[in-house]
Image 1 (cartoon, helix red, strand yellow):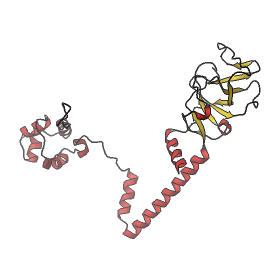
Image 2: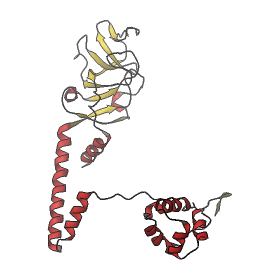
Image 3: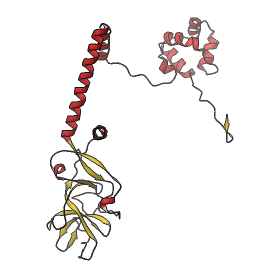
Image 4: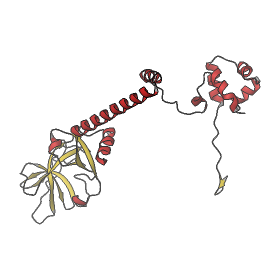
Length: 268
């Protein structure tokens, strides 16, 4: 079939190499395989060179003679295998009468429900959700914090700084190194203007740029001495976000799998 002048051919499966590999693994010659199937050595050779394909009626015998699973012959992923314990359970289940099978299925369903509820309770008691921000502190985005669209639920392990925080912000730049390295994340607790004391590290927005700085009487200080003090007067556009409580630990955040589970619980 042609489409805009381009011909699209069906993908051709290459069986030959697979047949050859399993024949050699089985220690058989082409003539022996052909004799079992009632075909000539030349026919088997053509199959292995992908000159021709075996008829579908030969495939079950080929699979048996060469100990070749069908998924391997067709280039498909290996199906998931049952563990020994699963096989034993299945064998026992097949011994049950229909009535006892129904009873067993009900018991398994009850166990699954209990496990699911226990897992949900564990996740809820282990994590709490903060507001995560994609916009960084100390790197400009000139959108008011309340209308910043790039926020998400950041799930953190309960305890310590996480219990006192409201937000998580990424830090960009070297102005607060080594306290808060470039690329790290920090916990922020919301605070009203006038509620912070000199010497505290704050997150704020100055002239549209979010910053993390140490609040001092003469201005906003960086930890890194290479950065100058930012002088802020009463006429400047400065807005406080809150106190920076400290860095987000390496293992504070939920894993991807835990986030998926927590999001599912939140949706419920």
